[in-house]
Structure formats: C-alpha cells, structure tokens
Image 1 (cartoon, rainbow, N blue to C red):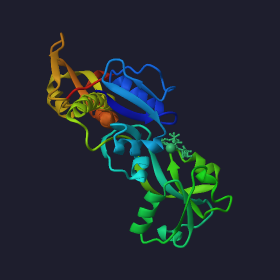
Image 2: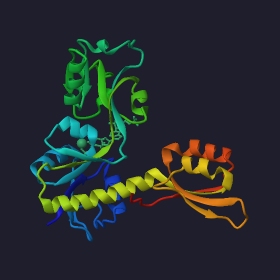
Image 3: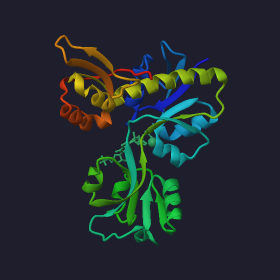
Image 4: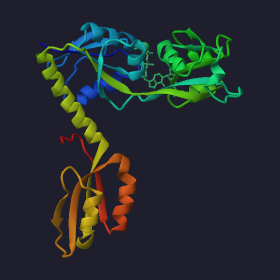
Length: 284
Ligand code: PRT
Ligand code: ZN
C-alpha cells in the first residue's frame, strides 16, 4: 500500500512541493519527467499533474492527497479536505481596473464586465456584495483583457503587482489571500491515514523549524528572570553558569516573527554575545 500524492507537474509550485517532501526525508528519484514515481524510502507514490486536475483526482481517490494553491482548491470546489497550510506559493486574488479609472467602492462593478480564470470565487464575492456584474471566463492572459476591450476589469492572481503595473492596471480589491495547501480525500483507509499522519508530523516539524530560531546569549544573573520571560522557549530556557561569576549562558528558541523586537529587548536587559542559529526540524 502506498499513499498517492498529487503535485504540480511543472509550474510555480512543482519545485517547492518536491522540496517539501525532501525536507520530510522522502527521497523522490526521477524529478518530474514521468507521470508518476515512487519514493525510495517511504510508502508513497507521487503523481505529477496539472494543478487544475488535482482537486478532482483527490475527490475521486485517484490520488489520496494533493499539494496545490488554495485559490485552485476553492475555485474547483470539490469534496476534499484542506488538511495543512504549507507557507509557500503565497499570492492573492484581486480585482483590478485601468489605472486612470476612478474607484470608490465595489459598486464600480455594477453592470460591468470582468474577465477571470476564477469565475466561481468571483461570483460568490459579487453575490455577497450584491453586485450584478458580467463575468467573462477566460483561460489565461487575463491581464490584457481590458486593453483589448474584452472587459472593464479583471480578477486574477497577484503576487508582486508588477504584471498589473505593466498592463496599466491598478489593484483595487483583494478578495482572497492564498498559499499552497495540502488536500486530502475524505475516505482514506486507516492504513493510508497512518502514513498521512507520519507525513504531517514531519511537515509540522519542518514548518516549526523554519518558523523558529535557536538563540544563545550571555546575560547578567540579575536580569535572567526578565530574559526568561522574553524567550520562554519550548518549555523553559536552558541556563548554564559562565566561568566568570555573575553571568550565565541562556539557550532557547525564538519565533522568527518576533525576532527583532525580542532582540532589542534582550539587549536592553544587558544580554551580550547573542547567537542566532537556524533550526532544521523542531518536534514539540
Ligand atoms: O500547468 P498548470 O495548470 O499546472 O499551472 P498553472 O499555469 O495553472 O499555474 P502556475 O504554475 O502559474 O501557478 C500555480 C499556483 O501558484 C497558483 O495557482 C497560485 O496558487 C500560485 N501562485 C503564486 C501564482 C503566483 N504566485 C503568480 N504570481 N500563480 C500565478 N501567478 C501569476 C499570475 O497569474 C500573474 O500572471 O503571476 C502573475 C502576477 O505576478 P506578479 O508578481 O507580477 O504580481
Ligand atoms: Zn493550472
């Protein structure tokens, strides 16, 4: 028995998806040339597919789990579960209009035509906002739809915003923020669920590792209490006496997001010789 994992064959998420499996210690041999391959050291088969097809294949059980953009999962709206957010492939789905148009609020779109490859998500948004707009579904090159007179506005994926800028458009509403997610078939056998749990355990350890840093510093003993409150770590920090009396070495873990604020505070309590090291895996 093998857990069948569908990932994007070639595209923005392919490499990162393979990298994630690698970080979980899973060896995939052939890159993404073939349609499917087996992992060498884990009960897993990898299917390389177009991201558009992954939700359907997972719903039908052709694949047990899949990795793809949340935007695609929501658009396809299949009967699958989102079981993990993967912190890569971040983007947003936004409405954009010609840059010189005046925009006050979403009522701008009343009676207008919007081109998109994500009609389902857009229809839902307009319905919630009570907007009656004409949605023109197109497969690609959405960003040129206004300049060729196909539509008044577009609804598309935005990352840096430079594509919009190059096409004389401005982003005026973010409808959805998205990242790569893992989806699962709803009726996995207990055997497959067990393998999936193992995989999720490893993914979590990797994600925690990238989110956190190992920190080592020297601190005067009279500020240890304050410092331990700042960097409580996984349970409590490790404190070891330095050979010169009155000072200790403190070892702990710190979240990347708080990083600079905490460092500033640590310095104000007299911390010195602060070392910050990457963590490869972190099992809590
Ligand atoms: O062949 P297949 O169907 O598998 O691939 P695809 O062409 O449908 O998808 P692909 O590889 O382009 O993207 C896969 C997923 O990556 C998307 O579904 C998103 O979840 C995610 N993602 C993240 C992006 C972007 N960032 C992104 N910037 N997908 C597309 N873009 C495009 C966007 O369409 C626009 O043309 O990049 C342009 C905008 O980028 P900026 O940086 O100029 O704003
Ligand atoms: Zn696609």
